[in-house]
Each structure stands twice: as C-alpha cells, then as structure tokens.
Image 1 (cartoon, helix red, strand yellow):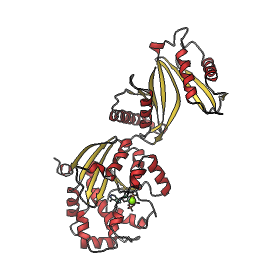
Image 2: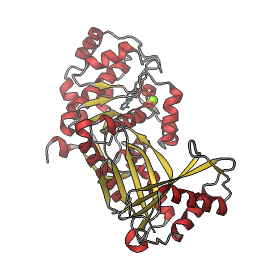
Image 3: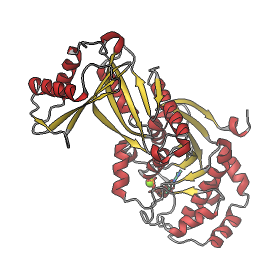
Image 4: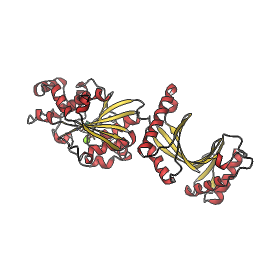
Length: 420
Ligand code: ATP
Ligand code: MG
C-alpha cells in the first residue's frame, strides 16, 4: 500500500477556456512547494484533479504533514489523503479478488476516525467493471466489517457524519476518508504581480496574503527609519513577516528602504501634514520600483476609519501622488476579522511584537483631511528635488528574496537599478 493525495481545484467551474492554464499553474506551485520541502514526488493532472504520488519510503505521519502544508497554497478547495493499492500487486480484478488488505485498512481507519453517536456510510465507485463484485454489495461488506471491528453503530446513507470512500480503477484501488479544506482562491502567479507596502502591524501582511489568494505573486516594500546591517537582517520583524507570507505564496521579494533622506528634508519643520507627505513619498518610491520588478499595482493595508489618519481624503491624497493603481483589499474589513486571518496564517505572534512604525515616528496628531494643493505646495517648498530624493532613497535599498519560507538571497539594490 502507498500514499497519494487528491487535490481539488477551487473555482474551476468559473474558468471556462482558461481552466487548463490555471490547473497547470497549480500543478507547478504544488511541485515547487514539495521541492522546497525536499520532496520530488510526481504531481499529475488528470481531468480536473491533481494527484500527488508520495514516495514509497515516506511514513504516514510525514505524508500527512505535507498534505497540511499543501492545503495552505491558494487555489485548492480541498485535498484528500489517499491509501492506494496497486492492481499489479493486489490483483483485485481477478475473478476471486483477495480483499483482506482492504478490509483491514478500513477497519483500522474506522477505529481511528470513530466519533461517538455519529453515523457513517461507505461509498464504493467501480470505475473498472472487471471488479467481481457490485458496488452496493461491496459497500455492504465493508460496512459490516466496520460495524464488527470498531465502535461505529449507526449507518446513515443520506447524511452520514463520516464517509469512507473506496474507488476501484484499472490501475488500483484508492481508499480515503479525510478531506482537508484548503484556502480556496486561485494559484499564485495566475492573475498578475503586485507590490505591497508592508508595515509592522497586522494589516499589510494580511492584505498581501489576500492578493496572493486571488492569484497574485506579491512582493514587499518596507520603509525603515535607519539602515539595516545585512548580516543580522534575518532577525528583523519585517523580514520574518515576509518569510511567513512566502511559506504559502512562494516567490517573494522584500525591499527594505531607509527613509533617511525624506526625514532629513523635513526635520525640525514640525508639519502636521508629515504623515500624508510620507504616504505620498512611499507611493512614489514604490512606483519607481514597480517597472523594475514588473509589478502591476501597489497594495496597502489601509482600512477605512481604523486609525485617525485612514480617511477617504488621505487615501485620495496618496492616490494623487502616483499614476499607479493602489489596491486596498482590507478597506472594509473589521479589525477582529483581520486579526483572525493573521492568526490563521501564522502571522499573529510576529505581528504583535512591538515595532516603531511610521505613525510612531512622525506626528502624534496626523491630519485627517488633506488638500492636494496644500500638499503640492509643501512638497515644492520642502522637497524641491523630488526625483533626486527618490533616486537617493532607492539607491540605499536592500533586496531580500524568499522562496517558500526560505531566505534565498540578500543583496544591495544597486545591481537591479544599474542593471549589473
Ligand atoms: P498595518 O497594521 O499594516 O501596520 P496600520 O494600521 O499601522 O497598518 P498605517 O500606519 O496608517 O496603518 O499605514 C497604512 C498602510 O500604509 C499600511 O497598511 C501599509 O500598507 C502602509 N505603510 C505604513 N507604514 C509603512 C512603512 N513603514 N513601510 C511600508 N508601508 C507602510
Ligand atoms: Mg500598523
């Protein structure tokens, strides 16, 4: 007996002519994730399903852990963990099939999945009619085994609490009884590329994840108060956050950009507009980076009314500073829903660590309303050489690359800007 996984694609019925492209992408993401975990197992797409054949020498515990890892990949509705009996070995299609191994497994699974007062059903699908017994007869035989060799007492064919599936095909027999629910959505890389402005709070990593769940490859840009030494950068809270997002979204780049030059220019001016000037500065620097990394939109963790500065007026002022499309997937979320998502994604602990973010560094009482012409005037007066400011800022950036939860590269950004 061997282990397999069945992967059911999410939202496939909506995909029409594109379904082949989406399945191909998901298959590749599954293969890449397995490779990142050091497993080179065959991943096969047949019709609307994907099958993963677990290698022979892998224990059930390890295989089950891998199923749960795969369930975090966007684009999967559910996965099943499958016990597979090879026809060549067991010869179920002979006149008198030897079914002891199947009965033994089902009795064991029934004991393992027993829940008091719940009901069960057995569903047999006979895809190869050479199998010598009718589906219903075999269902009855297995149900009897389960009743005799476990504590299950109630059979319910219309609405069972637990179903045991047996699928008889030409190449072998599959048994499964566990569905692991995935996150749904679309495979990462199937809908485009975005650049998320990542801060130290709960919101922006969740916003990035929501875009990844809709199929976007997501990169990050974070603005830091000072220069970060490359050597111990892995301890940084922001770096650990990006790394966790990459566990399920795969390829992720993080650009760490010191905002020293912006700070110097506005130092000691005590402008109550500095927060919104900072947002516009972040948007412009990020916009400059977008074509270099082929990003199609910026993403923020903005949430309407969450803090005093998150007003429609301030968001509009930020929009006006750039031609880039700015997406705000969390705009209408409730805070507790964002926190719950953050916990589901394994981000809660790292995001709750204290972080000196821009709000703490800049004005205590930020403006809640801002007029574009006032901002433009301030920028012309205090930030006269804006393009130089952007260039100098970006030249100091460092770029980190993650791949499924591993930091695979760190370098200063010059190479990218100067095309070396
Ligand atoms: P978060 O929980 O994501 O930190 P927040 O509630 O702290 O968000 P703000 O500080 O008002 O919200 O920032 C709004 C958005 O601006 C953030 O969600 C993020 O997308 C972006 N942002 C804020 N500070 C930074 C920063 N230092 N670097 C990059 N992006 C930032
Ligand atoms: Mg915050």
